[in-house]
Image (cartoon, helix red, strand yellow):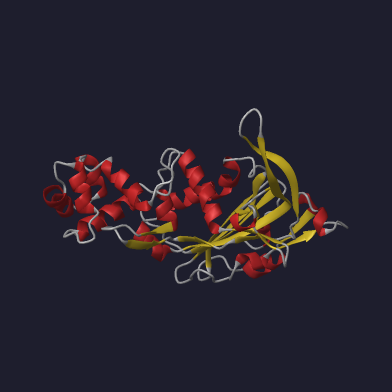
Length: 337
């Protein structure tokens, strides 16, 4: 099995939303989530993780937090359905329960000739074989579920109660520019040939959204996040926001990704929230409500460049810097790497 990640890191991710609804607020008629006092567009970490999960699934990665068909299922039912598909398959279960002694306990004392009885034993909070359940949950996470290896989960399931802290953590995202909404009446659904249901369709004019996150090597010891997983995460983060365009999420595109990989002895947050090191300024004489595209703004990386200059190398905080930019976005690393 591939080795867990060996370094802590912090990352910054920017993406734009053009005439779309980045994250509807169910308490506000599904309007884009906003802080109206500061005209800041907000997007939850849960929304961004959903983009990532959808991208993982599209590209053949197995995820735990998922729909089954067109239905939402609870965590306990999802876990049970997964185990029902492999409970009597020695090869599959041996891969999950890698310890031979525990696998023997599973075969001899937990598994029966009947699937329902076996599930009842497994999903019993008073189970006599907790070590087998722990091995099953650990094996499923480390060998099958990329999203749990990345983000963790609180498994509140009888027989499997355990909180797994995700190595990858994200703050809520917020816009770097003042955001204004447009709204229009639209046909939201057609019931039959004779009647239609009308509703409001709220969208942002333009929002440049910024997320700060961290990757922690110590949390990775529990979930088994590997370097391959981390590479997959970067691809999913960059491509996920535009890979599943729906009517309200169309016109969202990645613009900038920065990851600071720390040397041994340096920890997350060494440079604080990386969003504080950049600024988006309006170009020319436009008013904030007239900003409708990326070229209406200018990204200022000067504070970032000053902060990170001379910080890369042996004995310095940073081991490596990973940068990805969209067409038309400056690479700020040229002055300090």
